[in-house]
Amino acid sequence: MSFLLSLVLPFAVCVLLVGITSAFWWGKLQKPWAYVTFAFLAVLGLHRVLQAGADFIGLIASASTPGGYFLEYQQSQPDLVQMVERSLTTEALLVSTVLVVAGWPLLRWLRALLSR
Image (cartoon, rainbow, N blue to C red; front, side, top):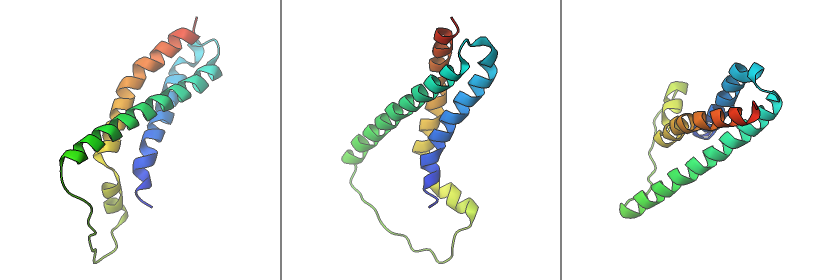
């Protein structure tokens, strides 16, 4: 169940990015709820494009290296901190970082469109 943190992290970044920008720009927009709706859909779309790119790069990287999966026996039940550390993957953190960096100009462009 702890693996869900990697799946929820980019979605939470989308919600936070749209929430923060809409709070800052609420008074400057003619239709703030339209901005929230379109911004959320745009950032989620950007997330899907970035995730597809990361999966494609991972597919190419895994095709060139031999290997597979193995199971590891654990003698004790891991605590919550260990479960969070294991479930946060580098890919999720990297996709979330790129999402913030690429989403900021996208949201500024959308604000410029909706503030006219």
